[in-house]
Image (cartoon, one colour):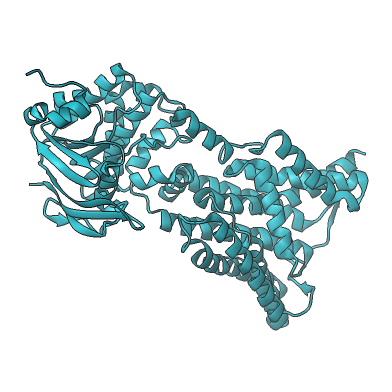
Length: 240
Length: 306
């Protein structure tokens, strides 16, 4: 099975270690959520898994094959796609071109074309704006586009880095609904999320990262029980 | 009066067509790297020098048509090889690091290539083979040089091919994503290093074609050609707007026309004065250039989104 297994990963920017030996696993078919304050290393971990950053040591295995040392395009070809923080759409390219870029590594052109139509049907807002420049979309639409672009590579594991950041509550609901739908379709989700309330409703498993280390792992029930997470992320003290 | 106008128009367009190619080359490199390659003109001059060297060494052995064709091939190939050298030496190692260091090192390579050219052909002025042995044509009072027509046609063809490449091919898609957002390009698995290298070589090839057109019209090459083509290409790019390829084409044509009309109206001594005056005015009024979007506008858009 295609478990994502991260073991003792150390990633550094110069002399500063952003990840100080991170180990965690994402079970196939799950929605796994990574919590943690700013600067904890969550984005660094996502970029390391995606092959964009090289770890200093450690191992990242997906479905039995080692990803450390692979280039970003090889990681995508193995079925892992990233929806980056701040969406990072191509602002000067049209919606359709953004989606085409998501399928950049694929050679099966007929299937790419049908996937594109299927995704536009799934995201009607994007279909209406097919020829519009992505930079002119609203934040929510850009987030949809970033998700759709990642899906164009037909991932088995979708990594989403703070998909709800800066979005209106209604749009956040929509994003989480999409996350659940994608998961029902069989895509494993590994997401960084600050909105722990929303994450608690959909995720099956949680990890907490602080200062480059995983400091908590547990189920939604265990998260709800944990005083520290309660105070830091749910903003309330559990009723006695 | 009308004849004079048309004559100046044609002169301006043919010069502008060559400037446009140089400007597009600069824009391709700037678009994918956000770096300025000051040695661009020198690498084109290197190609031109190889063409002149060929003419000097083997000119008497070849029929003039074959020599002209071979000189074109050698010039473009030389520009590509020199471009490869610059990319590997100045830009690839400094990727993601200091842009100023990359620019300054490209300046050093410019000097290096200029010295090398002096060693290859020590004379200041060196003959460069003409593309054909045709006399200027006279049509209804207009003097049409075949070289000028060749320049306009070849530059238009090159621009058309480039447009198709950028809009229809997989490489074009990769190049456009990279010039739009490098971080996003990484996220979809585009190999920025490889695309940058290919874009660089493409810019060298286009510039090599532009250099060949200019040198074949002038039928000579001097070490000043490096400075000259860097200046013309940079002005064309800045007029159009950093990073915009249609902008560079328009900028190049505009520069050629303004120079030609400036010269026709006020004499050759003010030709450059008027061209740089126009650049100054455009940058004051529209700092992002006529088609400006990259650079200034992108930063602005990013700030708005945050």
